[in-house]
Amino acid sequence: MKKQPTFVQAMIPIVAMVILLGVGYGLMGLRAELLMLISAVIAGVIAVTLGYTWEDIINSIVGKLSKTMPAILILIIVGVLIGSWMIGGTIPMMVYYGLKIINPKFMIITSFVVTAFVSVCTGTSWGSAGTIGVALMGVAAGMGIPLPVAAGAIVSGAYFGDKMSPLSDTTNLAPIAAGSKLYEHIGHMLFTTGPAFIVAGIVYLIIGFNSSIVNFSTPEKVETILSTLDMMFNWNILLLLPPAIVLYGSITKKPTIPVMLFSSMVALVNAVLIQSFTIQQAFDATISGFNISMIQVPGFDPNQVIADIPRLLNRGGMNSMLGTVLIAFCAYGFAGAISVSGSLDIVLNKLLKSVKSTGSLIVATAISCFTAVCVTSNGQLSILIPGEMFKNEYIKRGLHPKNLSRTLEDSATVIEPLVPWTAAGVYMATTLGVPTLEYLPWAILCYLGVVFATIWGYTGIFIAKLDKNDEIYQEYLKKDCVS
Image 1 (cartoon, rainbow, N blue to C red):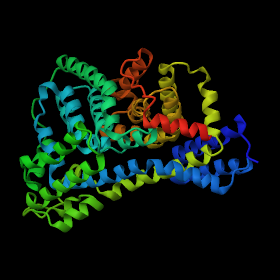
Image 2 (image 1 turned 180 degrees about the vertical axis):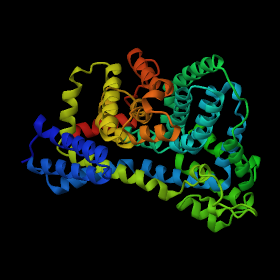
Image 3 (image 1 turned 30 degrees about the horizontal axis):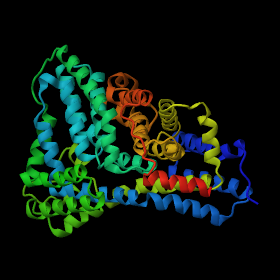
Image 4 (image 1 turned 180 degrees about the horizontal axis):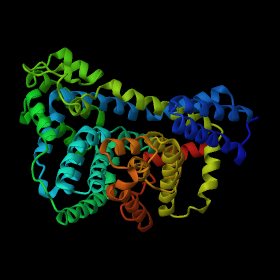
C-alpha cells in the first residue's frame, strides 16, 4: 500500500542533495552529475519504503524527461547554431565591429555596451569577459579608471548577454525548468533586464563623465585582435543574414527549431562560399565546434595568435552542449524520483504557507535560487532545482511559466558571479584581476534584475497571467485530478 511521506521523510532527499552538492561539488570539486544521481537514489529508496515500485519511479523520471525533450533538443541545436555562425564568419564579424566602436572618452559605458554586445552574439559570459573584457581592462588601467568600476561594468555586460542571448545555455535551461518557451522567456526578461540595463548605463555614464582619462589610445591587444580577425575572415553583409533569420523568427513567433536550423544552413553556405571552408569543415563545426586550426589563409599560423583569439572563437557544435544536457538529465532524474511520492509537494506546501501574494512568491523563488547558488556553486543546478520546485505553484496561482523562468535567471544566472566561492565568481575575479567583492557594487545589472522582478511582483506590473483555457493550465488540472 502506498503511503504519503511525512515532512521529515520528504525532506531527507532534499537535505541529502544539499549536503552532497555543497560538500562534494562546492568544496571537493566532485562531478555534480553523479552527486545528483546519488541524491536520486536516496529519493528512490524513500519512495520504495513508502510502497512505490521501481516502475513507478522510472515512469515518473521518464515523464519529467519527456516533457523537457523539445527544449533539450533546442539546446543541442544551439550548439549547431554557434558552430555554424562561427565558421560562417557571423560571430567574428559582430565581435570585430563591436570592438571598432570603442570610444575612450566613454570608457566605462563602452565597456558595458561592447561586452554586452559580444556576449549576446556569442552566448557566453565567460568568453566575453575573458577576451574583450581583458582587453577593456587594459584600456581602463591605461586611462587611470578605477579597475573595480571597469570590472563591474564588464561583468554586467557579460551577464546581460548570458541572460538575453538565445545561444546561452542558461537562457535555454530556464524555460526548460519553468515550462515556458525560449523566445517568450527572452521577451519577458526585457521587463526586468531592460530597466536594469538602462539604470546601469546611466550610472556608468555618470561615472565616466566624472573620471579623469589619462590616455586616449586604443590598447595593443585590441588592435591585435582586430587585425587577426581581419586576416582570418572575409567580411560581407550576407554574414548578417543568419541572425536576421533568427530575429525574424523570434518576432513572428515561428517554430524555434526550424528557424535555427535554417539559420545554421545559411551560415554554412556562407562558410563555404564566402569564407572558403570545405563542406567537411563546415559539417565538423556543427558537431565538434569551430577551431581556428581550420583557417587556411596564407600567412596565418594558428599557433602564433594571442590566447584571446582561440578563447573567443573555438566553440560551438553539438558536443559543446552535451555537458549541460547531462546535468539536466541527472537533475530531472532526481526530480522524478522525489516527485513520485509527492515529497516535493509536501515540502513546497510547508514552505509556501506564508507566501500569500505574487510578490512574496517571487521573493521565495529568488531566495531559493540564491541559496542554491551559494550551496552548489552551479548556476545550471540553481535554475533547474528551484524551477522544478516552483513550477506547479506558479501555474496553480494562474501565473504564466515565463514569470518563473524570468525570476530563475534574475536570481541565479546573474547572481552567480557575485558570490566569491562560485566558479563564476572565481573566474571573473581571476580573469579581470579584481576581487569579487570589490567589483560587486559596480556589477549593477547583476543585482538590479531581481529588484525589478520583486517590484513587478508586488505591484502586478509586467506579470503575465495564465489564461484558464491555456493548454498549460488544462494540463495542470488533469495532473492534479489524477494525483
